[in-house]
Amino acid sequence: MIEPLRDIIHLLIQIGFREKESLVYALLLMNGPNAITNIARKIEIPRSTTYNIMADLVRRGILRQSHKNNLQVYEATPHKLLEYLQHRRTKINLQIEKMHETLKHLNEHQQKK
Image (cartoon, rainbow, N blue to C red; front, side, top):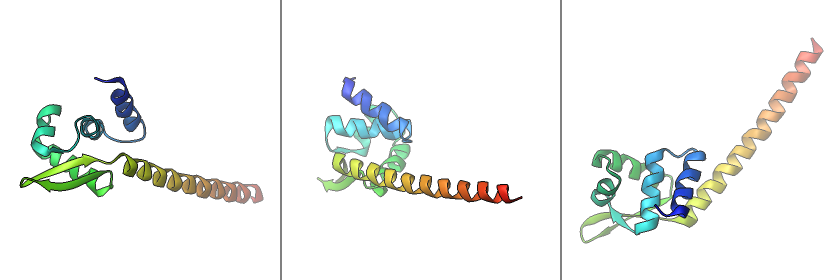
């Protein structure tokens, strides 16, 4: 496997993607747009599992689905992946701030006892 793709798979797993999601995304980056049948065969996972993975990645906005020659074709969208990650980072930062404030109030409440 090409090292940058291995790095992408590893990074995606580290940020919370499941292994199969990471493999699918990396495969699409490497091979370009592809049909589910080809993806399932190359990664050696059941087609039904591949459908679920693809639907989830499309829902998150990091894969694009289109039709080509009467086939559903999926394509990795790196710029959308980065947007998705930026959104997650913003959301996590807000959650950290809220947790900080909540813990601060809890600490103040405990000190009053």
